[in-house]
Structures are given as C-alpha cells and as structure tokens.
Image (cartoon, rainbow, N blue to C red; front, side, top):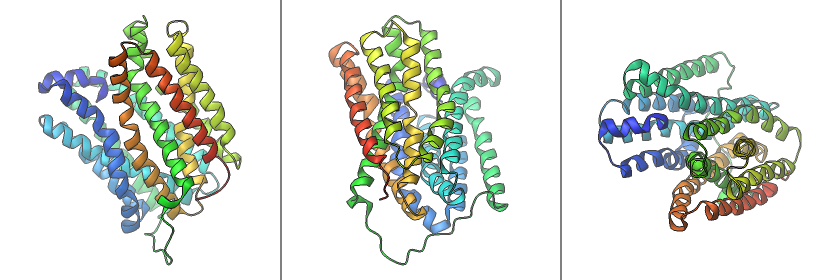
Amino acid sequence: MASVIGDVRSSLGVSVAWTSVLTAVPTLCFGFAAFLAPWLGRRFGMARAVALSLTVLTAGLVLRVLDGPAVVLGGTFVACAGIAVCNVLIPVVVKDSFPDRVGLVTGVYTAALAAGAAVGAAFTPALESALGGWRLAAGAWAFLSLAALLVWLSGARHGVVARVAPARAAAPRRSLVRSPLAWVITVFFGLQSLLAYTVMGWLPQILVDSGVGRTTAGLLLAVTMVLGVPVSLIVPPLAARRSSQSWLVLVLGALSAAGVLGLALAPAAAPALWVVLIGVGMGMFPLALVMISLRTSTTADTARLSAMAQSIGYLISAAGPFAFGVLRGATGTWTLSMLVLVALLLALTALGVIAGRPRTV
C-alpha cells in the first residue's frame, strides 16, 4: 500500500499524522506479534501455525480495504500480525525440514520476500489504474496470500514441508534472556532492520535533495529492492558453507559503509554506485536469518531465538526512520544523519562478527 499511500490519504481525508501511524504499524506489529509465534508453534505444531498465520494475513489484506481509516489501520495490523508469525516460524520449519540445506532454502525464502516487495511496489499503482481505485488494487494481493496458503497446505499434506509436532520439552531450558549470544544476535538483527527501514524510507528524499530527479530517485530505490533477490540467493548458502560467518559480515558491512559514506559526502557524484553498494550490503538481513538457525542446535531453540531476535529487533528498528528524520529537521542537512548511520553500521558489523563465531546459544 506504500506505493499508493498518497491516494489512500486523499480518498480517506486523513492527516499526515495518520499516514505516519499507518507506515509505522508494520514494524511495530512485527515486534509485538512475534512474541506469540513460539506459543502458536507449541500449541498447534509449526505447519498448522504457519497455515493459521497465512489465513490471518489473507483476512487482514481483505479487511483493510473495506471501510474507513480505523478499519484500514486495523486490517493492516491483522495482516502484519500474520506476517510476523510467519517470519518467526519459517526459520524453524527450514531447520527441521531441510537440515542439510538451511543456507539454500533460507536464501530462496528471503529472495522471495525481496521479490514480493519489489513486485508489490511496482505493480500496485498499475493495478490501481486498471481496477479503478486503491481499494481493489491493495485488496487484490489477498489472492496471492490465499494462493500461498493453498500451496503451504498442499506441501504439508504431501510431506514436502515437515509437519513439526507441538513441542513437549521434558526438561526446563535456560532462558535466552540470560544468553549473551542471544542478545548479540537480537541487537544485530534490530540494527540491520533499523538501517534497512531507514534507508528505504528516506533514500529517495536524500537523492532528491542532492539534485537527483524524483523519477530517477524512485528507480534507484527500486534497484535496492531488486538487488535483494540475487543477494538473498547468494549470501545464505555462502554463510552455511563455513562454520564462521564473521568474514561475510565484514564484507557486507564494508560495502554498506562505503555506500552510506558516499551518500553523506558526495551524494550526486555517483548515486547509482552508492545505491548498489547499500543494496548489496543489505544482505545482512538474510544473513541474520540464517544465523538464527546456525547458532541453535534444536528447532525449539531456533523458535525461541527467532522470536526473541525478531520481536525485540523490530521494536528497535521502529525508532530508526523517525529519529533519522528528526535529526535531519534539527540540523537542516542529511550529513549528520548519515554519519550516525555509519556509526550504527560499525556497531552492527562488530556485533555481527561476534554473532558469526561458531557456537550455539
């Protein structure tokens, strides 16, 4: 819906504040709803829990286009709750169903996420024109969610996806809150999400303010999203082939830092190069997901770590775009904001190096 947010606002007659709330709902919901995922997995089994989350997602996508501002917000929250549960449980299912191909399957999964985001951003405006309004355009994506649900049910029924049984732990387990490694992975996940959401939210405006045309700025943002597909197919398998992923964190961190520094110091000199460097550096997201599987020894621990990292991590990331914009408003330029991003990148890289060392929580 982000690509038609202007038309949504005009149609509903809502304020800029309402629009800001709508754009913040997904990240906040990812954080809060992720806490429910382990309980759902234990209660229903992973396969049924994922099917339930896809059902909730489909219902939310339909609900949010049926009425006014409150229903749009509510439907968006419901849809994002379904996504949040899927985000937490899919790494668990991957680890259980494909224990020898965790990197490859995680790569395919995250590549599909990147491709879906790019397709949604690119085609929703076209659907709006073809269908005569933003409601039908945004609601049409419920058919894709429904198709995903049917494919998932078929895969679970035929054994393509392991039907992970509800967990029945015989012995008490140490809380991950007491695990330093779990906290390192959690903050690593949160910082990479913060940087990704900040860049995706503000990149076009940064480029426009530096003299790049608005159309070109939009295309460059699309480049960062499309790059997520090949990067997601490459990074997780590379990470899974070695016991340590610290080297890969260093490479991706260096690329991201170079791109952000380029935007801070000479944004108009080579904007395409800076965007490509940042886009490749966003491979930190699939790397963070695969490390959740690699740093755990059982599917139960994977579920707990995935929930902790994504719930707290997404709540950390929610502050990024807002704080970035406030700092820009206070200073009148993007320079200080971008330098703060570089500092966060250094912290992210340091945490990733620690998280990448071969051991388990």
